[in-house]
Length: 89
Ligand SMILES: [Ca+2]
Ligand SMILES: [Ca+2]
Image (cartoon, rainbow, N blue to C red):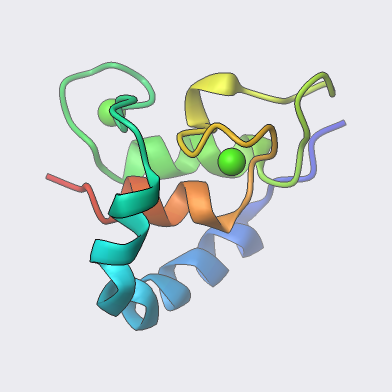
């Protein structure tokens, strides 16, 4: 059961701007896992869209995508999206 939807994406976009100030803190908690979720050579909105499809899922659930669990804590949440989005480009 997929819980991700476009509203989650819009929420993220709003939060990204306010949370970018804590970028260095978040990077400090991340490992070297690639933020290029779809492995196309760019970290961009398409990776966030893929994240949104799994948003709210836990490891082992239908819809969970380990590629977007960039924080590797077993849940697809906003922190993963923030980590992806601050690595855009
Ligand atoms: Ca990508
Ligand atoms: Ca996570």
